[in-house]
Length: 299
Image 1 (tube, one colour):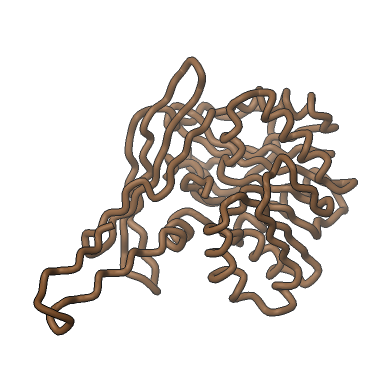
Image 2 (cartoon, rainbow, N blue to C red):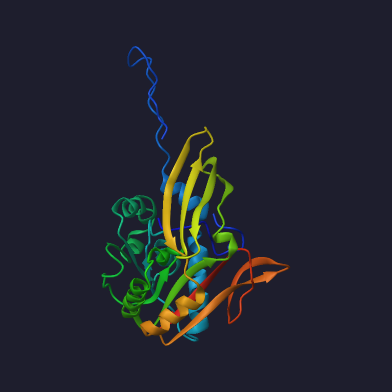
């Protein structure tokens, strides 16, 4: 899961996208079953993802940059458990989605929990590919979404340029590439952010976003997600990230070099210094401690 904690409504705050021992006993009558390890994919999704809000945001951005047109097909790169793809097809009976990710176990988790709850008609409109995003060639999409800063995995300029060129080839005639980005001083300092997660269908637990290191010469950074369960069980390094923090000007230049006709930055509106969850086109951002923004690259 290439994701740091973020959602379409909480991006202004700093992000936050083993133990099971068998007691000694004399036999089966005294031995207790080891506690099942919590499903880290479930913990992750409940803590950081807002698939329905992302779908709404995609439509809003697409209609802004492509007035009068409606997006029907979505490609979700680095899709993980592809919750966004499932929310996309569930939102309209005409929508289709393709999710692309390299990790088999992560995709399988998505099939069991997210795909399985869809109707048979909705499931038929979701295609999941275990493949390299640099090489995959599915049907061109209206929107190609890269959420939760996943393209930060490309550390070399040449590789990121290659990826953007591949994205351009993967877009339909009026297609739009949507890139989710984050930055600011709050992304580079060594710190840990904790968040208590409460959901009706599970025990409360603690989510920790751990910013381990940052190199100002290379802009490379290391992060991790940890969980602490209500019973005291701690899952350290449930997810780890080795990224280069790209800047908005760098990405805009690369998109132009890759062949995109135009790029638009969407920045979160603020009221009294607080983010509203609404993103609008702008050419100037605010110098926030930590920010989340989107770039729409037009084919």
